[in-house]
Length: 107
Image (cartoon, rainbow, N blue to C red; front, side, top):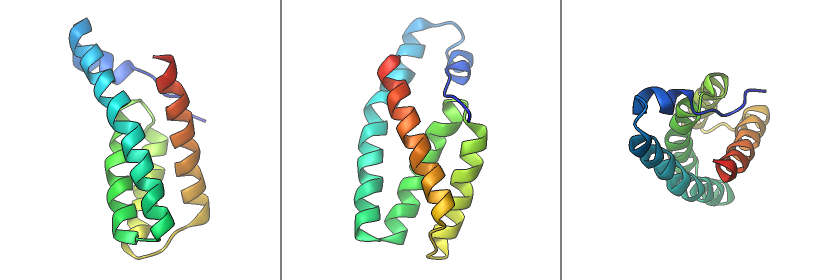
């Protein structure tokens, strides 16, 4: 399984610690809210909301160097547009949400 990292953030920040910290803080502040919104939409079984939440969250995957997981999230999002939830895609998506949540506690 891929592990989150700061390589892309470091590249964006160009060794500017202030920019790096700002980007990290944005992710640390937004991610838990987006995850909560995702799970709320799952509880309501609202495919449009779930899709919108997956769309927002998947970009954090890319920023944290999780390209394979980003592609899985794309598949998940696509199936949601067709009002389908593939259990394996959902489980993979939710597993990486947990991984990222734990990672964000360490940075």
